[in-house]
Length: 426
Image 1 (tube, rainbow, N blue to C red):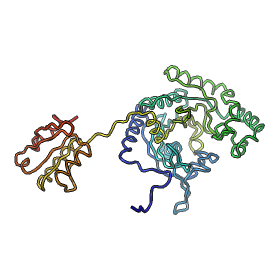
Image 2 (image 1 turned 135 degrees about the vertical axis):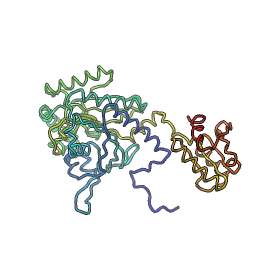
Image 3 (image 1 turned 120 degrees about the vertical axis):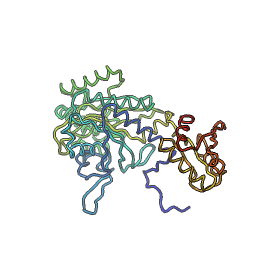
Image 4 (image 1 turned 90 degrees about the horizontal axis):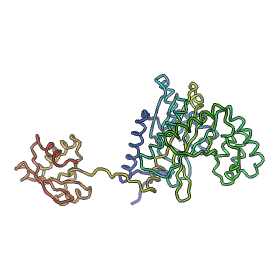
């Protein structure tokens, strides 16, 4: 078969054999977020490009190398959103949600787009689950966000995750840190990659987070931001740790966790999986970003949240052999012999579905043998055969497709559904 085209590289078709797993994970994530008071928000797939230039940062790899940007027919520059936080912040401002009772708690599952090399668990089109809390600057807000992430992973059955936290301070205490970093890296600039040499003046903190092995080796002994915290940032970080300690949430301080953009402040955190000697981030975008709202044109407003890739989460669950319940099978397949029986089957199926019973019937005008074979293929729990004699008697035989047991069921409109629910519903 010669196909006209195939799926674009870096995208995937989510087939029925896998979509139920995704639905299971997404339902748990949204339900867990709702227990913390987060309400779902849905934002457009594309935004004006300047939102991400300012919100994500024009000096980041995402903006410089990974965004899908295009001009529409009106000549406006638009971008498929590479992450969910900035769009949620824009919507919160545009619709005046900050005038409601604070904090504003938003959650979403949204498609995102980044042009990067496709690999296991990483696609150019991917889905991100995120929570954003606007208007709460206290350490308790940071701890609540971390607690939500932790309970979410627990609820999904994911184990062997390590919570790593750090504080990157505020613009005041970061000045001294930036100066110390510049001094340290300038003395070792010959060992840095070209990208990091370019970062020396503009944003030396991003060198600490570089994935180049040589840069990582140089950064290993670089000064740590935690040693430069002002009294206020130190007190905030200490309070976050106390909340986590009181909640019996284990963590370790990783002074090498940084964020390269100025609007990130104070607490940053990651959940890390260590499998087969490979350290991989499960939740790598957690933390406080008190400067973002002002950066995109809003009032000064604290904010904290996290994001996690759904594909990466599913891959981890598969590697840990986490059990995801199979979809509910068909409750009853109604096989019909003849036109009149077909009309009756259609009527009965409609009544069952109205009562939330999963019922199917033949819609391909197949013979009885083929219908029964189909019922077996879809793993129907029960099968009912309708023919002339069943219509005449008002009774039909229901067969348990697993045990082979057979039962009689009245076809009278008044009692059919009630009898089914009483005797056969799970």
